[in-house]
Length: 539
Image 1 (cartoon, rainbow, N blue to C red):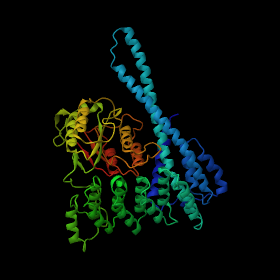
Image 2 (image 1 turned 60 degrees about the vertical axis):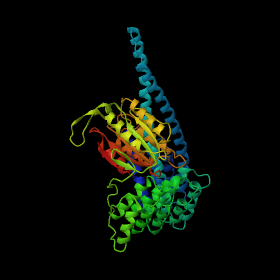
Image 3 (image 1 turned 180 degrees about the vertical axis):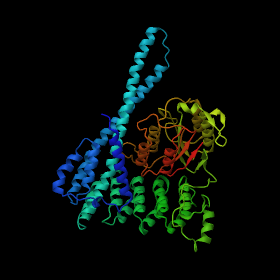
Image 4 (image 1 turned 30 degrees about the horizontal axis):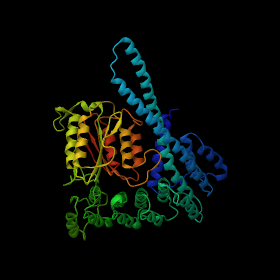
């Protein structure tokens, strides 16, 4: 049964509210009207056992208001049941996606046929009608499942909010024991990545018990998944204080596969907007192994100081030597996205990146055969949009060297990976990618959601209801489109943005966006870039 749009809107609203609580520890579920546990518990249990996601969200909200240690049992039981629902949802999405791929292949094969006689045409039309019905049914089912996944993310975000509300609502003497129970459940030896991320969210939201030591322990535990460590650094920065500055500065030293931890440290210093962050960031720019982190550190320094001394250490160090004693710290951060173009790196549509792990996600829908227009004069060009894309990509790939890895994803109504994996940018690999793009002729609709979902899967980030282990193998995405979403599991811009926000909450991927032509949803593409550490350009 299709999930009603009102339920999707409710899920989005509640997810936004839950994330707002996580981002503002001073907001407490306990501030809401209090219910007596014995009177409320039966109704809360019924809500948490409901098949309707909106009911379960309401149940978690009410559980978070129960100022009774027993309420924690309700939340822990709900988590176990949600895990089973999530596993079933993930299985259904995988199976339906496979069915859709089969139907799309069958449609393409049928379109290549050439029936001649009236009888052949009649039989052909009947067969194609059945195939298209299967295709449309698979699309509809995937949209239903995507709405269910949206609710699953809302519920997942509501769990730590509810748990923190219970901890903050009980007597101060009882709060540490409740935190110990949650630590045993979500940070014990058998805890997975999702469990530990949930534990980080609780530590970020709880206000009645100091949590800085626990967050620091998670951030500096090299045995943990890097996304857990990065989330702990980000949570420490959200809580603020001197300890947060120390945690973020310590994170800057992380190297190699632990780059998401360093990225969280850089962003944390930017958000904390403290003078103590300037010098460590300047010293960081002296490293030779930064890759994309050079962009991040440069952006943070620009935000902290309002200065523009480029992405390398020496100019900043020279300035700081003279300015340190008298430098007046700006009251507010500068626009962190208003950067001058870096002097080196890889440039795509005017956006320069220092990344060593680049993923290009490119629109090859039917509208890419339209004529391009000169950005400055508005005059119609002789070339098509796809021809300009091919030239731009070829020039960018030529800047790569074998130390960098890359992959190219092409999307229309379907999503296709060209290389099959993140691939070292050797000359043969670059030539192969260029040829495959040249050989692809645009056709079909514009499936923005599934293209972005594929990008995060390539990166190694779970996108449905689970989080994969291991560091992301992508840190920068260039996302180019000339249209608005017309295909895919989700087609509403706000729902796509919410999905990306969930996928990227601890992966720290940068997404740069490029709009080609005047038919794009500029507001969506700008938001996609700004919310994910990137830049937006229009061509």
